Length: 224
Image (cartoon, rainbow, N blue to C red; front, side):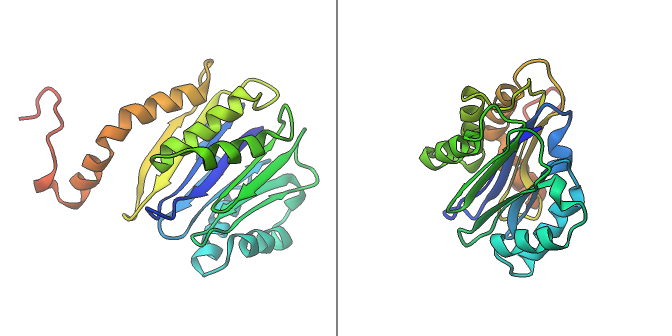
């Protein structure tokens, strides 16, 4: 019930994921990122524990391929799962269990991987990867460009209602963690609007955490 992307930007060190689904609040269950470690997704009939396990393995030095292979060999009910991972060395991996739902697809390139289920066509993940690799700019914007390409190509077989984006950089928390948990409109379009609103303020929010004395004012009523 999902199509998604995980990616790494070697120029900035950022990791990020973006995901959309017909299910509500998809990012709350499927999207996992950790600074200086990796970006992963646990989807299809989702077990969020697998996302944490993948990040732990990456943090211990495993490549994306080795981390996904380890979880695929050891996790219970793995035939119902779909796993996606990227590491900081250009590695990427996707696992799709034999009981994944509907039309299943997967694709990967250097530092990027995509997977989906209940798709209109199994080529959707390749569309996502191609769009990402052809894009430029902030990692978050590139992830959204990739999801937009998936929507334009047909995306999921049924209507999607939720989407999420999470990106980590040098600090120990996500520098962007945006979600559309339910909408009757296109959630990827709404998520893109959220990013356009948030992007100009992103660095200010990081500065407010690290050094409030150097942070810009909020510019809202009551802020003096």
